[in-house]
Image (cartoon, rainbow, N blue to C red; front, side, top):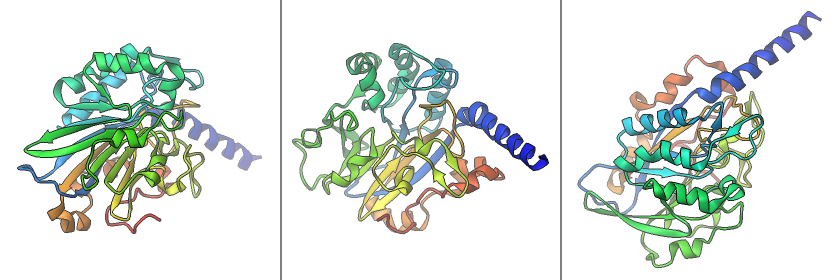
Length: 317
């Protein structure tokens, strides 16, 4: 009986932590990625990534979204990517925020930095036109099977975005129509499952949707990834050949308003000129700048989850 009581006590503590503590944490995940044919006066391009906001009380209120935005702006990004699922439609006990309020909280991003978004499956379940309109009204460009040519410091970057594949609204051919086959493309997609069928010119796919599993158990890892990709590709940075996939754990929750061993995160991707590739491979992230390492130090709950793959890691297969 004492053992049973102890187990129930541990379960209650873990459940309380998952419901009340971890969803309110916020980590900054930094990765460096070699970028081909990147010629610019600056050493690199800093790209911030936010995904799966799922705006709703109690964990993702308008005030909370503003705090995430402030954290992003403090990193001084040159480009911000929003990987979909702005609304909440399936979170137990949550009270969803209207997309107009979510967009209002995100507006500061577009006032300071070029900001682009794609829609996710929850946005399509709610009202895709309303969500897109709310974002566009606040200066956030929504890429719906389209691409944009951007210029940073004298260098060109092709950014493409596809509509949600879960809702079967994606059209990769249309999104890339008019780009040159030899032209490297950064593709923004809500779901990472588009990565295997993207052509070679897509050198980096940025996605969300999986929440990194949201609940990650000791010696098991994520219980559900909502993706057909290998479970190890449900979170973090992965190299497949000479191409890369980055999957954000997101900042909100769905299903149940809980997280365990997969806290909310902001992604900061540094696209490094190709001539610095050897340096990037030796040092995929500056340990002095990896806030997540400091955040996780001494927290045994995170020891159960595999570390995110880094540029120096073996190629994902």
